[in-house]
Length: 226
Length: 281
Image 1 (cartoon, each protein chain N blue to C red):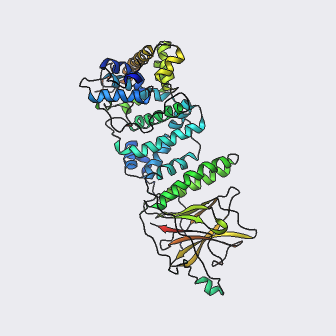
Image 2 (image 1 turned 45 degrees about the vertical axis):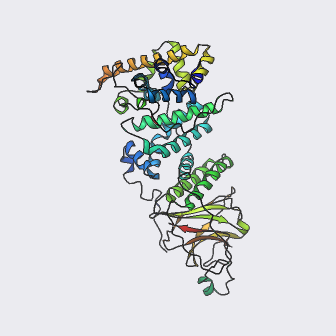
């Protein structure tokens, strides 16, 4: 009887660690479990950290990560590197799943769509240069930009992005008119963009990429997973 | 009027522009977000504000501190993605009626036959077969319960989780041979799978397997044209799990079965199978 040499990877992981995220997503789209396994190894920490922060529950956070990977598995064929970096796409899916799960726990909330619509308006698939930008940004810079905002704008953004609250819930929580919440979030994000663009320009703005407000440089969308 | 109320009507460009920030932060209810998308789908005017504010979102993601997920989560994820892509079908037929062996030579040459009298036919199916689906669905169900049972036994959980993760990885090899295992008789209710990748070791995983009677053990067997050869002994944990790793790959095997044998195992099976499954590849 032939005795095989134990090899947990079965020899199938050769070279996979050298593949880019985008190549791994291509593999996932082709149904390669090894590619998904490699993506998991790369992103589980980021995804679980995001999910834990938003849900404040380790068990729910695990559900978020699992749901996110199921979403990645199902939608990998629809991913386009022209729309966004793999990192942006993966974290966008994770964030969406996290806020969905948080909202399901609230008895007065409507159940959100789990999968979302299949179509993506052209307006929401603009280019994303995050790989270039990310190399020049760090958490300290971003935190500084966030903290530079007026308190009301910062609070609205934090409640939405880190707390998973809807605009209605933010309005109720802060006893603020709904229109004011919308304005605070939009203006706060625009001011952050200006702050980050300025900081990047001082560091080393990549040639050919215009990061000024109104330019297409720091573009992106929350619909990247759709 | 809120966007929810407005979702019944068309949003104006000005209203959509004002919603850009809350939209990109996922702070709209589902119907409100759909109203925005509906507008953008049909609007002839550009809406660069979505790109402007959306570009900040990846930067905000840098503020989340990475936290390592529990070690067993990967097993759950891999099992979850394995399940929906495959179509389910009927479980493996496991009824056997071996005649008692009178001599060792007879036992060595034993040919098990199903009750119909016909020899078990090999079933060569795609790796994307019902067997995989049944295995994945079973795993999803049992892994969660298993985590609860063993919460206080972290070391055992980690070791078993790693072995099961390896077994799942082996089962997802496109060239792997996989058998869905079902218990019968004294092992009624037990389920599991055997996975043999094209290269590397194979695995046999059982859950809800009752302990073997005192002085006895579970022994796994390959069946090749009804002839049995030992694949190894399985020890059942107090949680009902039994995992056998480092199993030889037998490309010619058609079935995997378990029998209850005297402790230490035997050269040839002396009892009827209590667990069985057909290999598909």
